[in-house]
Image 1 (cartoon, chains in turn brown, red):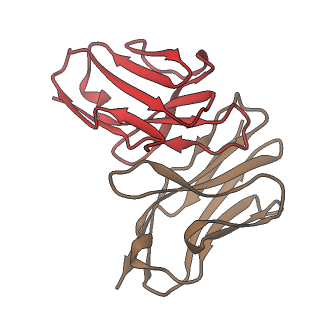
Image 2 (image 1 turned 120 degrees about the vertical axis):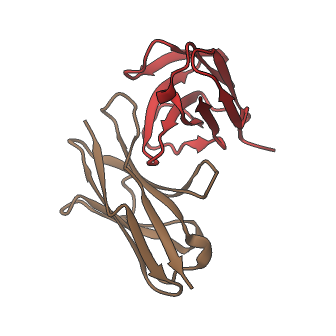
Image 3 (image 1 turned 120 degrees about the horizontal axis):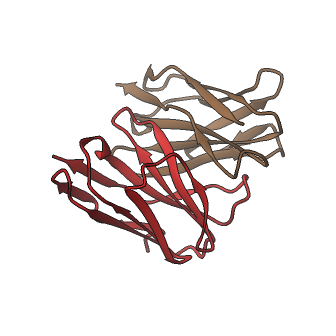
Length: 114
Length: 114
């Protein structure tokens, strides 16, 4: 079975500062990893995904994430935060086993201060 | 055109009532899902269907009954509503069951049981 842990339920950064949202996964087989963003009162939308190609994955809105097998991590970064980045971010994992389920982390709420 | 749509957006009802939520996707996807998001933003899979066939049925009370009349629609009927059913319910779809596929989410239905 797969699982995912997001470290920090809340992260606060200043506008223009680096954004780092942490995600660690557990999987007995090679995983597929995703980051989704949820803006207030909306559904989730995909930021980026890792599917065993390049380990550094670039997504929308300037976000990127690096798959590190040795650390079982898939942290999300953005060099410079914008006010519009304030949202809930979910890391998710799926795999060829696990009954076709995508398992979502508990979410990290990102606050951006002016 | 909205890719995944849900109706209604808000649902306020009394305990013991029966209600339905409808979902439609116009992406031509084979797989559809229902998720429940609680007040702490935790997202939990309830059901998934692939080509109208039930694939995932998590430990959800049997008061919840999904129905897929065709692969573009997945409805959720809830009998004898309880206070604990209050949550946001998201419908999602993906191209097929492959774990590498992203999921497209609807805007959510906020259910409040009084």
